[in-house]
Amino acid sequence: MRIGDHSTYRPRLSFGVKKLLLELNVSLDSIKSDVSFNRDYGFYFDHSIYPSSKELTNLEVLVLYLEDRRFFVHRGFELRSLLRALRRFLRRGKIGGMSTIDQQVVRISSKRSERSIRRKLREITLAYLCNFHLSKKEIFDYYLHNSYLGYRIEGCEIAAQKIFGSSASDLTWEQAAFVASLYPLPFPKAAWETYSSDLGYPMSDPLDVLTLCSGPAERWSKRVAARMRHALKHQDFRPKSL
Image 1 (tube, one colour):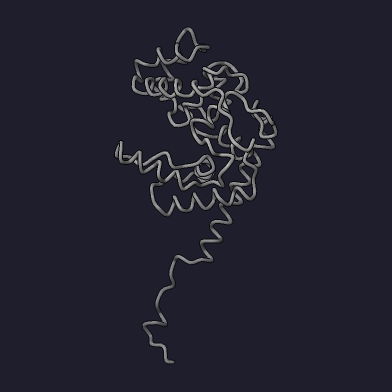
Image 2 (tube, rainbow, N blue to C red):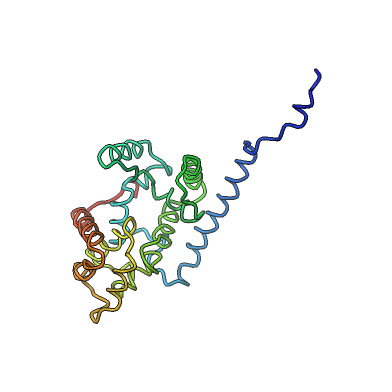
């Protein structure tokens, strides 16, 4: 068969299976490295919550309840999350709430958050693969300590120390509910500057913090308060498989 010139000089496709697999492998290795570093050197950063612990702290219980109740059951992705996102879209006109903790760990580690179907599929794939290389507690611990929780606040340990002057493992149920609410609702800059400059800082009662911050961030304060009330009704929550 004779091949014409138009085929000879046709450019190669930029997207291929081999390239995709290579990119996924590199990304997976990077995520594994980040999670392992968090696990092995958490003591250096004064972590009080560790993946080796068999008991869940108040904060862990409430974060799991609010963020991903079936975290220890699924493999990084759930079809029911699509239905939940669809219901939210029909009610509020916005798509959200479909990311598992595993997927959020991929997003934090890779620092990729662009809104595209390709990015989401990549995120789901990597979250699924992570479950074959890392334990659920290791993934969860990385999420707890590396999520953005507000202005100059990264992770639960820094949040607990800066906001309440306490370690993350010693938070009361009320304090834990406040910090757990920061994962989807980070502490705004204006509210933080108001709180951190107050003569009563740091406060021990989360409601006092919200009252003070209601001036510069009223909508945020109300949303956090509502989320706290919801969380505190489920202190007896225990995830399956633990």
